[in-house]
Amino acid sequence: MPKPYILGIASHKGGVGKTTVAVNLAISLKLLNYKVLLIGMDVANPNLCFHLGLEDANIGFQDVIKKKADILKAIAIHNPTGLSILPEALSESEFIATKSQFDEFKSKLAKLNFDFIIIDTSPGFHQPYEFDHWDEGIIVSTPDMPSVSAAMRTEKEFRSHKIKSSLVMNKVRNKSYEIHLNEIEETWTERIYAVLPDSENVRSSLSEQIPVTIKHKHDPFSYALFDMANKYSGRSQAKPLNYTYHIGIIRRIREFLHI
Ligand SMILES: Nc1ncnc2c1ncn2[C@@H]1O[C@H](COP(=O)(O)OP(=O)(O)OP(=O)(O)O)[C@@H](O)[C@H]1O
Ligand SMILES: [Mg+2]
Image 1 (cartoon, rainbow, N blue to C red):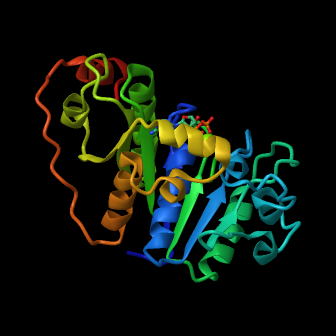
Image 2 (cartoon, rainbow, N blue to C red):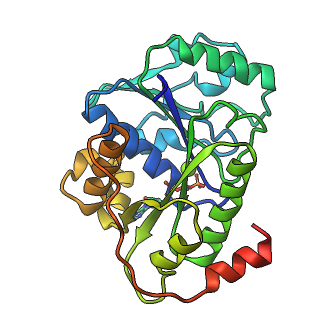
């Protein structure tokens, strides 16, 4: 695994849980003693700060990429965990960074000696070069058609840029109206990397600005995130998922979208 290993969290759809996964995966890896930097790149709608109580951060990712601030000065430390965070500054307006700005940003990151860099993004990406330097894209979806078809588009984009991708299903409630995970797996090139349950504690943690992996360590969502972090640290293997239904909708949608 290259160091730093850069993991971007993405989906063409909003609200599926990208920021929640980014924050809690970063914390889970930090709890395994890795050096982790969490970056907010959702410059269209900055919101990482709300998950961690960092609204006061007046310098952020935008200032660093525009070379208005030194990266070391812009990185905040999350007191309870020691996690390093480069959030989007709330005060900055939208902009599109150039390829050379991203190249320079990447070379700054490479000098910082982190094991993992986790990047939170806006739905459908906002910056044309933002995933050029990623080692892997984690696609977050929920088990419904609008999210899964958005995930397929994201996967297609990663494939065309030759970026390894992993699919994470979030807010899973195991209800009969949800798209069955087995069916998604059937048409995906890789296995579903993680299944994250829907949890009331995730919502309440957001309102308290204390990530669920700290506030409710024994919540099933937290266990699933710790398991995901363990997989990245090579301590456990992906568990085989055991599902039985075959409906055929996903296959039809793939054919329809030509992806
Ligand atoms: N597993 C879960 N169980 C319950 N609620 C969840 C879960 N994951 C995320 N949520 C809730 O869903 C909402 C959206 O989550 P989040 O902000 O992480 O999504 P997002 O994909 O980053 O959204 P956006 O595209 O707007 O940035 C939040 O209220 C969050 O608490
Ligand atoms: Mg978000």
